Amino acid sequence: MGFSDWSEADKKALEEHLSKSYLLIPKTRIYHVVGGLLAFVIAGFGMSFSGALSALRTDAAVQTKLRIAEMEKDSKSALDRIKVNERDAADVLTNLRSTKIDSLVAKRITVVDEAGEARILLTTSHERGLPSLVLKGSQNKTRLALYENKLGYAGLKLLDRDGKLRVTLTTDSTGGLPSLSFNDAQNKTRLSLYESENGYAGFGLLDRDGKLRVTLTTDSTGGLPSLSFNDAQNKTRLALYENGAGYAGLGLLDRDGKWRVTLTTDSTSGLPSLSFNDTQNKRRLALYENEAGYVGLGLLDRDGKWRVTLTTNPKDGRPFVEFRDGSGRTVKQLP
Image 1 (tube, rainbow, N blue to C red):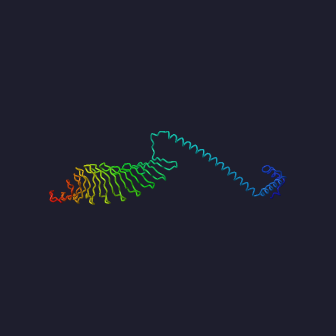
Image 2: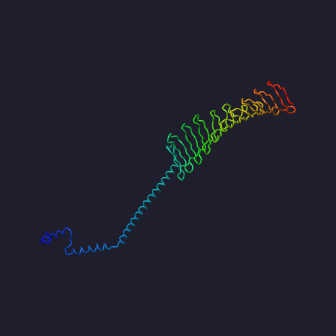
Image 3: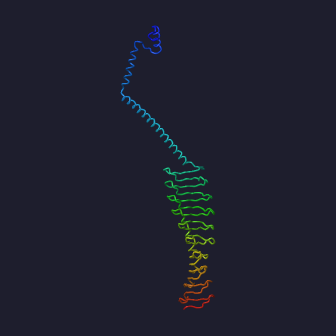
């Protein structure tokens, strides 16, 4: 059964129900309302797209300005906090400058310059915890280091701008004797100041192969000074020395370490003499000055006895040659 088959009473009841529950619009004005809604929809669809786009752009610009304003506000707040922190840091620094520190416990202390580069480091090694004080130059390169080695001895190192070790002040690993070494650009020791086991100081010059070539030191008995020049096999070939009587001497040695030439002074009279020795270190030729002030030349045998003498007569100053036998008796004289 359709709506047209309804009775008038049913239709009226439905109308009253709809009017009370949904629409309070008289039946005679329904067409006007519907027509107005249609006109509004048509007018809405007739709005230009450029106007809608302009409205969207305006809204986006407003939102951007709001975000910028919020960011400026946040930046100002952050800047204010930084200023407060700077004032706090300045106050802390002022307090540190005026505060006396009785003790300070730290694993590492770093002192930086105005640019923030580390210049002084006081720390300990990672393995054994040995202390060290490091002074750095520009480009974070170590220039000086104070350290303690594994045996508990202290040391000092100076490095050049390329980081190469040039000067070392330390003690040896056995007796703890001090030494000062100067290295070349290849990190090889070329000059050394040291203390010997007998307590006397020494000075050494080394070649590029690390061999000791010049030594200035004192002997182990009387502490007498000597200057030695060594060959490539570290054997002394020339020596300047002081003898027990306080007179200086110069000696030339062969490759076996035997004295072959000696220029010295007599231990009693102090008169100079130049001696040439054989391989048994016995004098065989001598240039000397006698007590009268005349020089002479003598040839000696293997027993050290004078056999031939060329000198001058102390009475008239005339030269002569004297020949002696094994007992020292003159056997012939010329002229």
